[in-house]
Length: 270
Ligand SMILES: C[S@@+](CC[C@H](N)C(=O)[O-])C[C@H]1O[C@@H](n2cnc3c(N)ncnc32)[C@H](O)[C@@H]1O
Image 1 (cartoon, rainbow, N blue to C red):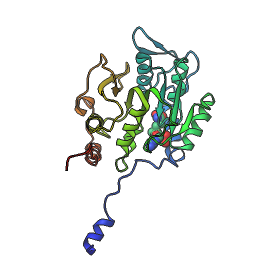
Image 2 (image 1 turned 60 degrees about the vertical axis):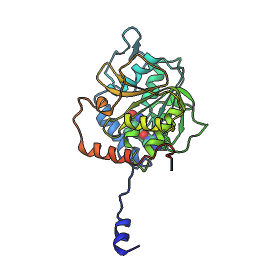
Image 3 (image 1 turned 120 degrees about the vertical axis):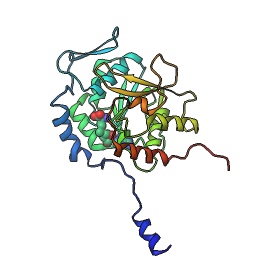
Image 4 (image 1 turned 45 degrees about the vertical axis):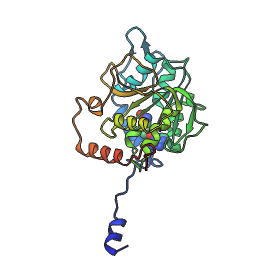
């Protein structure tokens, strides 16, 4: 290799996740949770704080509001009524704990690659002990992961940018779920609709049928819902639909396009 080429090889772009997940809780998560989220929203619900109204499909908050994304997760569980639910990248466990409180008859588990995040989760919600596990959703699929009706993530896949890891994470979440995958993620950080369609067309997903819908919460949150069965919801055929009304971030959109471009799908004839 010429010296010129060596120079460029050494300075080649290295793709990485947004955070160092080993130190994430100490570096920023705990502070953000306390400062940004807890100052505005209910995070640790007590009996009576939250309930689901099946008639309207809305979450009812008796004390303080929850973050719109959190509300959407709870509302989608209530509307879809899965037999079992798992959160990939559950962090401090607030969604798992509150969902379990609102839906006591639905077993709900959580996985996260960060042990410190899981320790924080059990500290915040002692009742979660035994429901959580170390899980790196970008690892080859493990049959030890809970197999459930519905898998969701919130603010997880959007931060995964290492090589083709976000494709692996999406394929794993689909395989772990029998019926639904809810992606409550920043919609500009990946081309979620296009990437899922490409994975499906390339034969990378465990479901033969893949329907992608827009899931909307009663307080404004939007997310992509993947479903094995046809549902009576607005269908998503493009990322532009999912991003409607959001101020474009050129930096995020460019990185999403670069991430998508690294995918090699299927087994092309040669
Ligand atoms: C921004 S936090 C969100 C935590 C939680 N979902 C919430 O909404 O409060 C992102 C979480 O994703 C976890 N995470 C990142 N990459 C992961 C992976 N490959 N597998 C499992 N969890 C992951 C991190 O450890 C962290 O707890």
